[in-house]
Amino acid sequence: MKIGIFGGSFNPPHKGHLFIARKCAELLGLEKILIIPSNIAPHKSSGVFAQSEDRLNMCRLMFDSPLFEVSDIEIRRGSTSYTVDTLRELKEAYPGDELYFIVGSDMFGSFTKWYMWETILGLCTLCAAPREKGFRPDFSPYTPEQRKKIVFLDYEPLEISSTEIRMRIRSNSGLDGVMDERVAQYIRSHNLYDDGFDSYREIMSGMLDAARLYHCECVSEAAGELAQRYGADKEKAKLAGLLHDITKMMSAGEHLALIGKDLTDIERSNHKVWHQMSAPVFLKNKGIVTDEEILSAIRWHTTGRADMSLLEKIVYTADFISADRDYPDVDTVRRLAGISLEHAILYTSRYTVLDLTRRDRSVHPSTLDCYNSMIEFFNSRQAQTIKVDEVQND
Image 1 (spheres, rainbow, N blue to C red):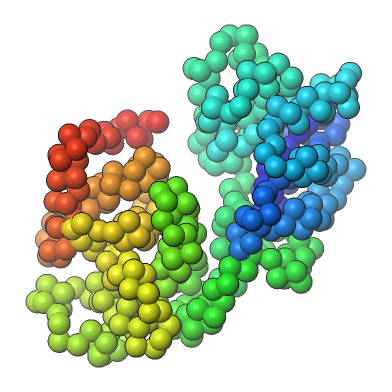
Image 2: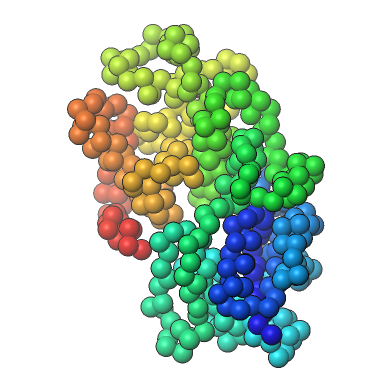
């Protein structure tokens, strides 16, 4: 028997997962696919992560077909669960069968960094499944013999992510076309993915339209991920990201009433920076947020400034790389943000200065200060900035 093994957090499972599993079955002739939710430590199972039992139940609803079998093998094992251990156990359970381990293109790129990855190739055939359009795997790290144990499944992917769905849930956006209604109902009835920010969302819902609310959720998610990567307070980063555009849709009069007379001539003529100035005043005056670190991150999220704090850098960068952004250079900025915040900020501040000067628009002095600060940062450390073409071809 040819058995597929499809693991992941499934947090939550969605139609993109189902699409991949069915495509793999079709293209590889699989007779059975094991759906294996990964173990997540209990202390992480709040806000972003659903409990293991909930993810198992959602998978059973999502993969409701004789082709699929949902397994709790990794959850039962507990603690750190390595793929190689799972495959060894499955090899014993299915000694005469062929195992096909399915990984999304997002994970395939880092496969050679996995624990005992060479042993994994000895236990199964590795199947690289596209999750985004244009994916082409890099086989250069593998020997000719290892290459024989890797299959690239060439098909047009259905681009859906669990991150996107969690943001849709929080912004009350529709889930049609991306999730089984039974899974959506399970999430609603069990109040999953509650991060404790609903009181803020209630205020925002009366001030912003659906598109802006969704953008704020995307920035919050990106800020949380950057905070986790770079050692900042994740809750503060997520809240600052969520609230950064809260006054975006105010009238000119409302902005000016909050900002007061402290507007320079450049700021007075550039309405796009008003919301970063009015938002912290609004939040503080209403008693919604009093934490100065969060307020400062919101204050500088559009222009940036010299010598930004870690949280300011995170929210500034998150606004450029959030999942809803689709400007031409966004993928480059996302990759730079994975290298360092400073690389991303240097690139984006330069991008902003060039874009504004190209259109004969004034540049806010704080944006110039931000750019110069990044130049000084790299010069003082005698550090090399990453070439853009290297990032794009990575």
